[in-house]
Length: 285
Image (cartoon, rainbow, N blue to C red; front, side, top):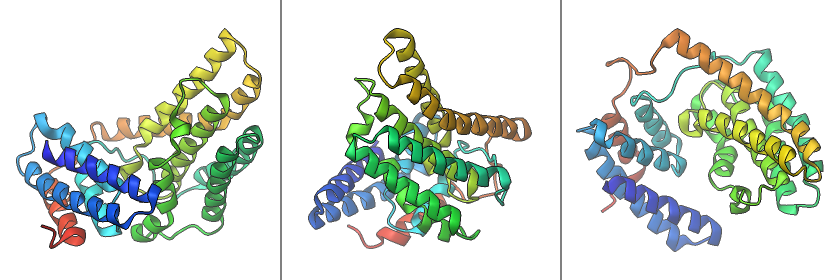
């Protein structure tokens, strides 16, 4: 699938450009994104079961590196037409969702203390804490474009988390607690704002939190490393958010059944991708 390969190459080039601050790599990423959009637009014109996974993967990868609101929104609309994004929250956040942000702030402060001897993790948690505090004090309005701008830091962190955070082979308690808090904040924001879109794949974040919590409990049972009780206590809030989200998701499934969007109620995947290509990549050869 050409579009899947091109979107992956573009994502890799975007990552390298961000890491090395390279304008040349930015241009390479731009070119591959354009090629991915064009071939993806052609593929969705004949969307079948055999290529649906590749179409979804390419769409997600392009959405993560979308340079502007319009292209991102078009890709989100296209992803929704594949029937993978349930609706599970109201248009306006209530007191329960606001409480999730307040709880995130308290839990992040405690997680920073737990990771005190890891400078990289403390810095990342501090940035995440500042983001949540600013969002709590001055939330964006209901306009999806405004929310897209406000949520840009969260999008970047989720995609470009330091590689060391993802190296869980040594089952480091600090790393698992830090990563769980990134995922928990993602879920809290997904529940708090009406239009963050499916690019955060909240069900995967929920399952990741539950998996990390299980790993920490297994460590306590097997070898009881130093600090494991503190880690279990710090996982309470991420687990509460995961449980809250699972309940909301179950309610949505009971109300809506399958999440396929009926024909005629939204823009088609092909039209969405054509629109995205026109907006941000017009003129590429």
